[in-house]
Length: 353
Image 1 (cartoon, rainbow, N blue to C red):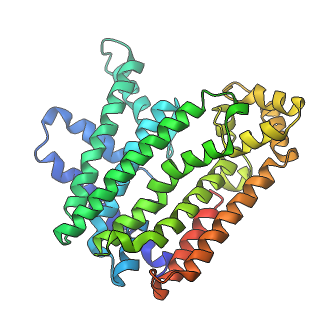
Image 2: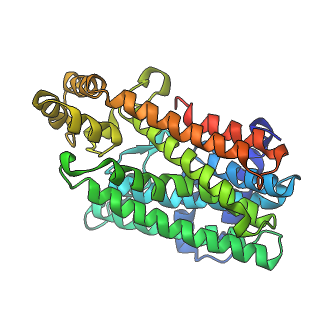
Image 3: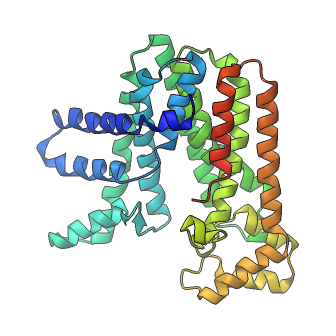
C-alpha cells in the first residue's frame, strides 16, 4: 500500500466525521445544534487529512491488511486537529483558516449580526474556546468506537492521553518562547517545542494509535516512534521555512511567522550569528503586524545572509537521513511497510505547502 492508496480513504474519513456529528445531534439540546453545525463546517472545511491518513498507515503497517477498521480513529484525529486549530487561532489572533473566517471570528460576527449584548469579540473568544473544547470528546468517542479488542483500544487511548499532554506542554513552551528576547532563545528550546507539539500530534501519535489498534504491543514500536519523531521535527522546520515566506510563490504562504514574532530556528540562528544591522532588520519585523513589505524582505535577507536558512535546510536533511537510516536497519518495521514510511517521510519534508 502507498500514499495514493491511503488517499482513497479520504471520502470515507469525511463520512465518518459527518456520522459522528449526526450521532451527537440526536441527543444534544436543540439550543446548541447551531454550534455543532459550526464545528462540523469548520472541521470539514478543508485540510489534507494527513494526520488521519497516518492513523490508517499505522494500522496497515502493523496489520498488513485493509485499514478500514481504523476509520473512526482516523476521524478522531481530525476532531483533535480542529480542537488544536480553534485554540491556536485564538492565541495567534488569527482572522482566517482554510479559506474562511476562524471560528472565534465567525462567532463574533454572529454576535454582531444578531445585535446581542456585550462585546462581540469577547463572545467570539469565549464561544470559540468552548467549541474547541467540544471537539475533545468526539476524539475519545471515535477511539472507543473502533471495532478492536478492548486491550488495543485501551492502548490507543493511553497514547491519545500522552499525545494530548505533550502537545499542551509544547504549546505552553511555544507561548513562553514568544515572550523571551530572541537572543535568549536557544536552538534546543525551539526543537523541544517541535518535538513536543508538532512531531507528536502530527506524526508520532497518529502512526502509533493506528498500530496499537491493529494489535501491536507498545514496546515493539520504538523504531517507529523514533523515526516519526525525527520526521515530525523535520516537518515543522520545513513549515517554519515556508511560514517565513521562503518558497512563497510555490507554497502560497507569506511571512506570517515573522510578523507574528515566532521564535523559529531561522530567527534564533540569524539573531545569534548576525550583525547588529541584521538584528535591527529582524527586530523591526518580529511581532510587528504592520511591518512594511520591504522591511519583511530585509528580515528575510538577514536570515539568508547569516546562513540561518541554509542551516535549517541542513538540519531538515540530517533528521530525514537519520530517520531513513533507522528505517533501513529496523527489524520491527516489516519490509513490506518500509516503502510507505519512506513515502510519508518524503511527503512531510519535501512539501511546498
